[in-house]
Length: 347
Image 1 (cartoon, one colour):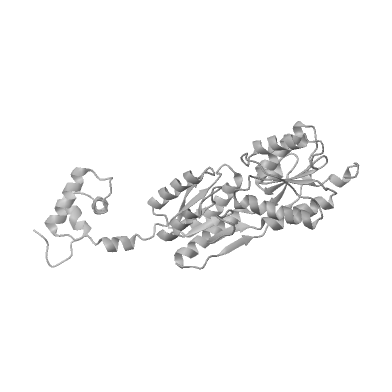
Image 2 (tube, rainbow, N blue to C red):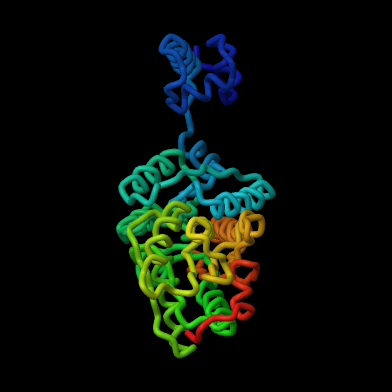
């Protein structure tokens, strides 16, 4: 018989069905984890005791999951390891956790990952977009009300929503200025195919710095991955030219470390025969032989800033788009700091 005079509780249902309170909760939430026989007993108890499930209240109680999704395009790049560490440090302090996934720079795979993360009811998404990501992805996130923070890359020519990145242009200006002071005139930029905002940002910053110095830009785009192997292979090709560059600025440290390997194979000395500068200033940059000069983008700080912005979005729905661009710095080491000390013909 239905109880009267007081509300039926989950504890009452559990006692009547001979199961735990948590099992009753799973049944009422229509969880697939409960056996059919158990589900039948619980629903029989619901009917017998006249329990009414307040689904609206349950949804309100669980509106936040304290989880954030993080999607990057190259999980093997040490930059993203440091960035995710910054994200997790911030989320841990706020009693949140992250789900990390890698798109492999494939927009279709990225779309599937975002769908899966949404199915897990993440509270917000931190996204370093894959090359050629369509703006329709951001449209979808807007429609479903999921806060999205673009990190280091953005969809379109300029960020339309929340964005956290590094001042790559200022870093490239410092790098080119240093190389010019060292006596370099033939300075090349090795970057991607130009399909991502990160490529375009590097090309624009480098071109402006070269023109300011009165030099002709030499942008080397390529369809290879932005990896150590790509840096090795592309540098070998470049140094085989009749008049190769005397300095290389690489898209990231991985490519720059590959460039150092190429120069070693050619019995050329980095910093003397050809200067090399990377971008990111990963831990390996200072430990390589010779040590790699690099533009520091401070990925841990980038991660912290992105996570903090995501938490702000959750606390303040409708927050106006924030564009945070963190400062960069140039760390000079042996790979780009000895050119003036070598006697050579005028360039």
